[in-house]
Image (cartoon, rainbow, N blue to C red; front, side, top):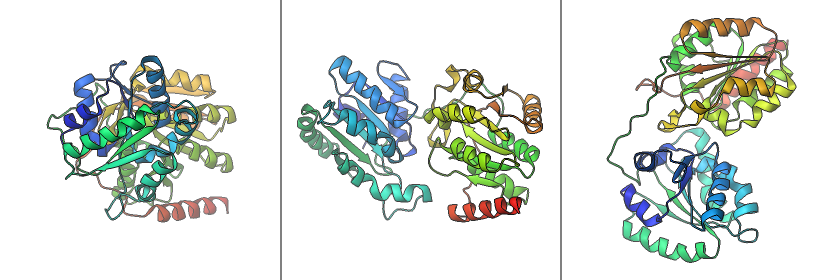
Length: 375
């Protein structure tokens, strides 16, 4: 169905969410209609953040908010849904629009399969009534379901529309871009060259896909890299856990701005433990590029200052390849916690592939390499 029809049926004037490729039509419509206007549309740091913002909107206005997200974000909403929105607590109504990745019996990436199987069960466990919208679902059917949902919302409950692949359409294209010159894949090529045989933990999305293909082109082993294909926002914590138990080896964490923002508190923990062998590289294109390109707030904050405040000994920003190479080499030479923010353009090769090894193979090869280092 056409996105505008769904939006008319939802009849809300406040949307808050975390972008999802399955909901790209929905997100593009919101960007074209509202931009990121604070009174109508906010792209939040994570899905729990969305729920709390939605609650604040309802408390301030008495109106019903819409929260949109990928189903992978259900884990982030469990606590604020059951201990804040729930009818037995504050009874705050909300409408969820959820992209269904990993839908059973449809091929998808490994990180989405388990989540896809439990998507509807999690909604049931949180006492959220739902309906599924597929490509053949009509606006008449959705309107009838919304009529039923209105009574639940009136009671202070929550409802959800679960969106299957290809269910929503939007004919107007949106071009996401910024003014930065560096290209992420070229940044990663330089990092691979300079890091040599160090440990690399890469964040979810196109970053890990590009890192995999760089190793393939170089005819290098993938044993140095842990590709964090799921669990967005947790690569830096994985890298911290490794660095604390591999103190004799440099550990590089290649993060994205959206992932960093999703669980920003991890930087405070990293700073508190001061791993001298940890190099945190944040590739900042101020966009959720891997799921369509919608903006983050990373161009409105000072990442280096945040890092310094968290206790990182060195925090620098690279805006060109010369300063990038210098920063990478200096960080590797130092024996103290470092952060490098790299400003990048939005975009990737159209023929960018995906890892041809399974997550389990990646883990096994990575762990064998770590055991070899310790032997």
